[in-house]
Image (tube, rainbow, N blue to C red; front, side, top):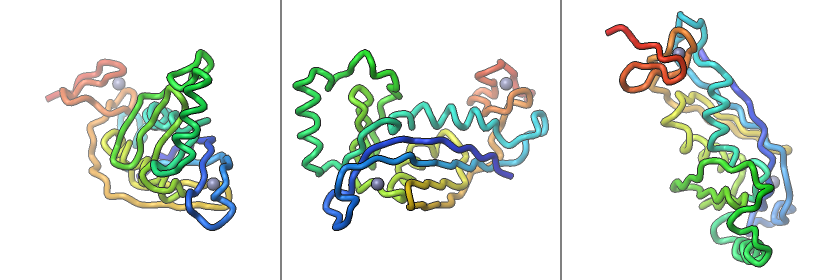
Length: 189
Ligand SMILES: [Zn+2]
Ligand SMILES: [Zn+2]
């Protein structure tokens, strides 16, 4: 069965080099749906608590929220960084409170201190799904990701590992020692 969670991401981007309106900088509220698959953990009668999926996802994905997302070869990137630098906000500002854990993957690098994500590929809805899966695949048993943004939508299905040991009291994944990081429950050997 699947536990499904949804989160909103508001971001600005453009399709650099694209012959269409999207070549201009513009913004979206994107809706990301993450489906986590496993057996139902009998203790809590759920696959995985949705608020925990959301928390795990948001820890990294908040870097995309209220952020500017530019492709690495977009000439706007050095121009924007130059302005931020001159304004003294390149390395952070007291008002920037949505700072997630910085990440760097093959597909994207987050600069949370200045609310910027630099991507290898154009950030289409398909591109976003690839980035999100890559960031979360080791943390969640993801079966499907759907991303919608304006009139665009895409989804992708993934093979899951399944049968992750979860806490029968709060439903979250047990650590490598069979202990629940939230409530301290210990799996009987
Ligand atoms: Zn767009
Ligand atoms: Zn627990």
